[in-house]
Image 1 (cartoon, rainbow, N blue to C red):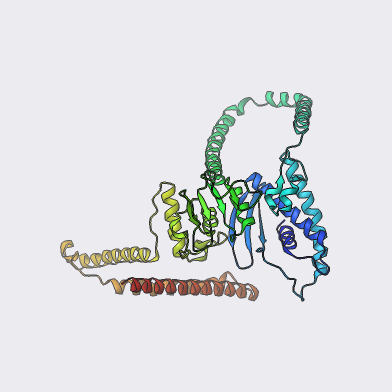
Image 2: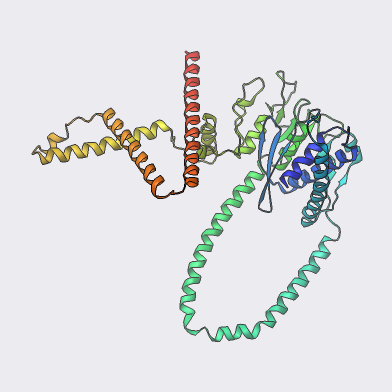
Length: 449
């Protein structure tokens, strides 16, 4: 569904000109809103990322992760070098595909398809808020009939296999003890698995209710469609300026006022005035982040991509470390700092202890007492330089042996060299990023002084 959703959201943002017809745009927008409404109903959204191309979304439906991109709500013009005929051919296929998928998803949840649309809200361009999800009227009766039929079929199948099962029971005599021991082991494994599953389901339930106690109000200049979609996916209440809005901006229940201007509106109620990025960052990190960094006129922190694994990339940004501490404190845990400097110091301390132990052994063999041998000084720089040289030499020797023995063919040797080259380039990029981060920290300290 990734390509289908991307194309449908793209056609929903285009203007009717040339070979792109008006009914295509209306159908694309309707199918996209129907899918978004299902995601809101199931609270299946997992990740959001604001990029230059558009807004990336990732939802988990029936155990499958679906990722698509939605363009920003600007006037989209079709470039001249794009073959619109190919896009129209794909659109015809994806229209049928997404229509059948939406039908299946809605009926599995006992909902009518297509959903009802409030004409008045649709005329006011309310979009997602105009769709009305209603349950199927005969869903209860049909489900009871299907349950009865499946129960009868299962019973008849068991009755047919009854003689065979009796014969198996009679032949079991001596294996009961072994089977009981295996069943006990299986029960223990099942209990551990169930506890892990219960913990994951509890965390997921808390994540899906991230904004359940929040009432949002959207200012005119913020992206309404995107914020309405993501806030409702996590149980939040949202409103905006308009005739069909759920509540007005003077409502006392409003807890968060999302605004992208320098001057806040006047209000007699106490509420948090935040920029839109706070919503997306809170979703990606699974907690309600502090609002001080996202206030009006504040310089926003880095918007990190949730689709990048910092540990596998080898570089963890400063903002990611700060967020990890916030998440740990929110869950009542303590996060230990694991910076490169601390780890290098620990490694050097271990090397010094090992070198001291060798010097003490040599002193004892030469006749020096243990108390005198403890006073022998050990050079830290000498140890670290020697150890680094030894490690580099050992790695180079291992690489040569590996290239000679394990990779005999030329094709595999080239593949191995390309892998090592990409790893080296990634390491160089990480080193440059670390050096830039250190320079920025130094400049910030100098500015403060």
